Image 1 (cartoon, one colour):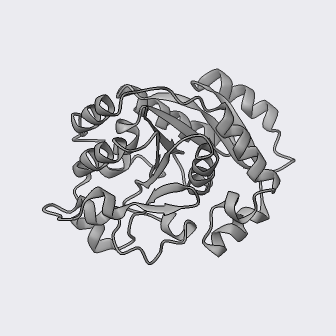
Image 2 (cartoon, rainbow, N blue to C red):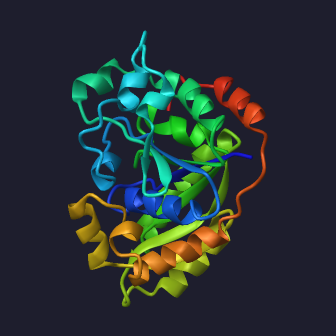
Length: 257
């Protein structure tokens, strides 16, 4: 069984990487989970997972003629497998985004759930590939109308390639933001359900500074509990690994965005 989710937002600052790792840790209680930092241009998951000294990263797998295997970039962390991406501008320029198809296909053969931490904006081929490859998207939002608008753009693009929406996740929510009204609008316009409402959290900032996922750094924090509840609402569908891998390898790489 395997399903690939793109965790996307449409804008920066929503806490998308924090959300990806939190959902990954929560889902890993029942599934074999692999988290991939697919934001090849502005990668930062390696800092959140204490992997800033990783010897092999996703960038090394995307260079034409690379001799590294996908498994070389997989690290066991916090009960899940983590594939970090490097931060070098030179490596980003040398990377071939189209090779992400083969990397994801190889990873799909040995996991239950793939979480692709996606770039914030749909501005390039490398940015849109995660939502093109995924089975479904989890759209991370802040409770504002502009954030909903950005998220809807992601959903529209994903659906044009057959990628449905698993649900929305409101993150970094403060008490005074009228989340009920915004969530009602989200339920009307987005596919899937509202998976969760995650409160703004000092613990999340402290976790980033410590190089740990939130659920590892502060497992009992209200935000951690809310992420676990969101993961419980995220239904993981069955799929044959071989079929999923074949679909990834044959996925259409957009020529234009």
